[in-house]
Amino acid sequence: MSNLILLSVVLITLALILYSVAVWLNRRSRQLTMANIGIFWVAVGCDALATRFMGARVETIRWDLHTISGYLALALMAALTLWGTAALLRRRDDWIALFHQLALPIWVIWVGSYITGVYLGIQRVSGS
Image 1 (cartoon, helix red, strand yellow):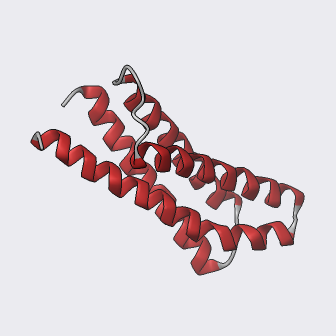
Image 2 (image 1 turned 90 degrees about the horizontal axis):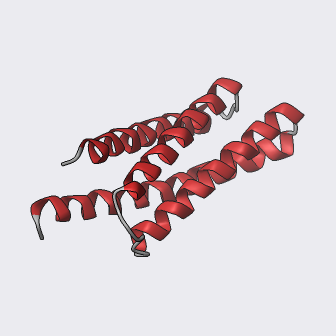
Image 3 (image 1 turned 60 degrees about the horizontal axis):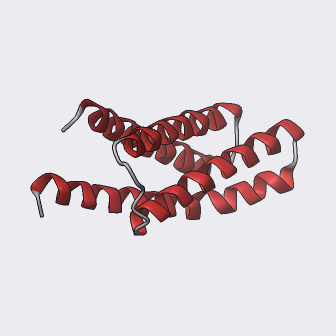
C-alpha cells in the first residue's frame, strides 16, 4: 500500500471519528456550539484531503456507488457545516433547529459511503 493511500485511510478514518463525535455530541446536548462546529470543520478538512489524495492515485475517476456517495456525502457535510456556522454567527434559532434535524441523516449517508469505501478497499487489497 502506498504512503498516499495509507495517509488517505488515516485521514478518512479521522474524519469518521470527528464527524461521529460532532454529530452525536450535538444530538445529545441539543446545543450547537462553536467548539462543535470547529470539530465539523476539522472533519471536513480531513475528508477533503483524503478525497483529494485518493483521487491523485487514479488517472480517471470511476463513477460507481462509492464515488458518487462519497462526493455527495462530502458536499452535504460541508454544506451542513457552513449552515451551522452561519446559524451560530447570525444567532438564528430556526437555522439551528434545522441543523439538528439534518445532521444525523447526513451523517448516515456519510457513514454509508465510508463503509462502501472500506469494502472496496478490502477487495482491492485482497485481489478479489
